[in-house]
Amino acid sequence: MNSNIEKLLILNGTIYAENTVYEKGYIKIENGMITEMGERSRLTDTEDYKVISLPHGYSVVPGMIDIHIHGVNGADTMDATREALDTMTGTLPKEGTTSFLATTMTEGSDSIEKALKNTADYMANHQKGGQAEILGLHLEGPFINPDRAGAQPLDRIQKPSVDIFKRWQTLSQNQIKLVTLAPELDEDHELISYLKENGIISSVGHSSATFDEVGEAIDAGLSHVTHLFNQMSGLHHREPGIVGASFLRQELMVELITDGIHVRPEVIQLAFNQITDERLILITDSMRAKCLKNGQYDLGGQMVTVKDGRALLDEDTLAGSVLKMKDAFSNIQSFTTGDMRSAIKMTAENPAKQLNIFDRKGSLALRKDADIVLLDENKDVFTTICKGKIAYTREDDTHETN
Image: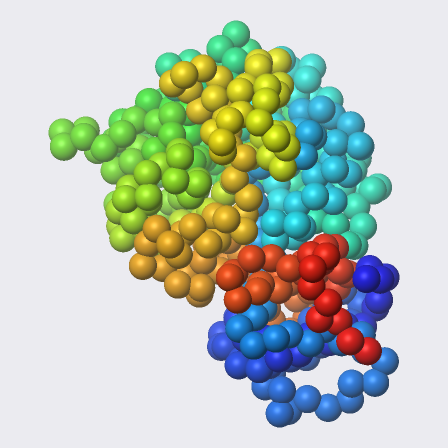
């Protein structure tokens, strides 16, 4: 299929537009943007469009946005090479991801700085249509609590520092959009306050903060929670912890890994009931082993064993995931009472709003980027369109006609 077609026409699918659903609808795409959509009966002027005609039962949804992903298919953000980011941007459309935050991890300052500079250079000089778009960087660590390190190397952890962050943000060409930190270690909430003042999301994660400490951090500007339940203070009837704050504080958007491994399906249902699709954001937190076979793989200089969908640093420590966004999308509907619209909110709309890019991404609406995923009757991805160019089509599907 030619990925250089400038004008595309999608026909006959159930289209989940921003404010409505079109049964047997259509979408026109031109120069990377959505220019027209509606019911098929209202369609006119199809000349010069390449047509993708969908069978009954197929759906059209917004491209998914993964704000917490380290790597895929043998590549990792921390590799700090153009080739690694080419692999990530080229592979992710296969799972319905059309844009993402390249996520770093706790390593030495030199390694982090190389990754920041490499990602900034890639964004400025090498991004193109027909690939997943890097929206910026998620700095996960090193400003975390050693008691909640998980798979983050203990000897590389640093205290939260505004001076260090300023240096890193300069090296990244101001592309750090989200910072995971332990607020209980951020003295006088200096870093959280600085991030808030500069429009950068601060997230509590890898933290032992109490419920009250989270509340104080929210007052300073905290607005996000990194991978709910994992490496954080849990819910106790006398100390609600970060989990309790996630349930109760409406100021917080909350990440959730829905692979059924990091969090049991029943607890995912509990979180969905309490937090709802208004505040949940589905992420993968995936590492380089995603899309590869069982074996041992590097994560921040540590060996991780991947077997049957689990990535383990040792017997008891999960080390990221191998979850695909398309599976997060379907799992949330299997594990909870959420429907397609809920899944769309949690994989596209909510992350776009949190990143303040909902004017151009996160929903199917006129003049927005044509980041679109076509799902078959089993909710599996068969075509992904990134900024109007076909980035992936499953080989067993031939629904394109002239």
